[in-house]
Image (cartoon, rainbow, N blue to C red; front, side):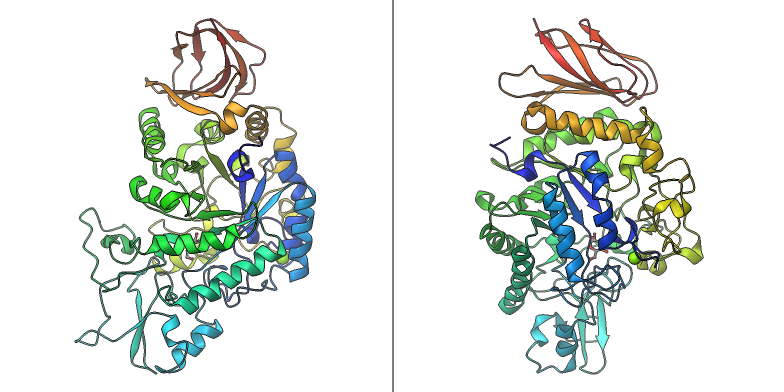
Length: 533
Ligand code: GLC
Ligand code: MG
């Protein structure tokens, strides 16, 4: 593994801290709780945890609205709890990645309070203030991601400020060098403490159009879609000047050894891969979310993988994501049986996998009654299915009260099937999806072909997506995934006389060897090692 970095050959696990483990009975997960559960991550076999924001915050957007980039919110604990967590994680060989939210602060951040205090304040230009349009309305037509205009009028100073998300999340002005320096200082603060990298929130948003041109309408928008999608975000994000900013940020990390820069970027492939930067001086891993939006069939998935492989720049390391705290659970998107196929896909493709907490249990979206809603997006645009609470529910650990998540009242309801779908129960079940995920991760670690080998497409037709992973002198691996509901046959490639089965999504076929033709049961995925002719 010496020729790849940890963030290349390892698996990343996302922890949503409010929902992982509560240690003090307030119903909200915290740092001590995460520390108590590191055993699970080691047992599962992942290499790094990425923790969604833990900084002081009024929690308008549950931590993505920050009032202090150098602190820990009391709901999550104290700085010393963080240091203990980091030390324990490192002691067990786990890396820790923090979420970094540079695009906007909370409107309670002292910088913003100063900025809004007067047009002449030294921090006025730290945010994006514009005069009203001639009719007194907002400066342009830009929309907020959580509904409504992206401009909020501030009567005290007679200007509007820009917020890509909630009005409680004013956007910083990243064209101002003092802002950039302050944010790089925040990065150094955590790097000095020993964190292993950052997942950078909405990285493609940092720089907006220098002329604030109107965004064009989106012809594909229909009533019932999110308000933000009425317009194409042509001028409000992904501007050409962003890439020099990303390179600056990367340089901050490069002053330390072995740190990783991950960018949250929702863009089509050709624009996404630009975030690797010129000469790979940008993000190490621009998050690749294509599997989240893919139609779940062999042809579409294969096309996505092949197009992505083809689009990667020289030296650009791939990565794959199936779910996160903003998206529907994978098991709900594709169904329980296909969730196993999805896990095998994620953990056998070429590139760093990111696993969202609970997906290893096949956790589904949890229905949230109107009076239980927490997510501000759902509150702003109710009933459209935009709310993110269903995918943020507490991790079910065991059969005790509240599934072992809290001794208090959980901030969001547990999954209704928590009595049976929990870590303890599924860990004891040799056929569970959890056991499958653990074995896949172990396989990925054990076989260089899986964690750093080449990807070679093999066949996609009749519901089957099959590919080879190949590395040096070792025998090639074959991954074959049946997306369909019927038994399928797959001929091995001509250079293989047969294959040894390493793993089936059903976990019920072991030590089988095949002839030249392989049988796949409905919704079955297999990993095999080819026998050369
Ligand atoms: C990112 C986060 C999301 C948050 C938004 C605003 O998309 O993943 O949870 O609401 O940025 O910070
Ligand atoms: Mg707590």
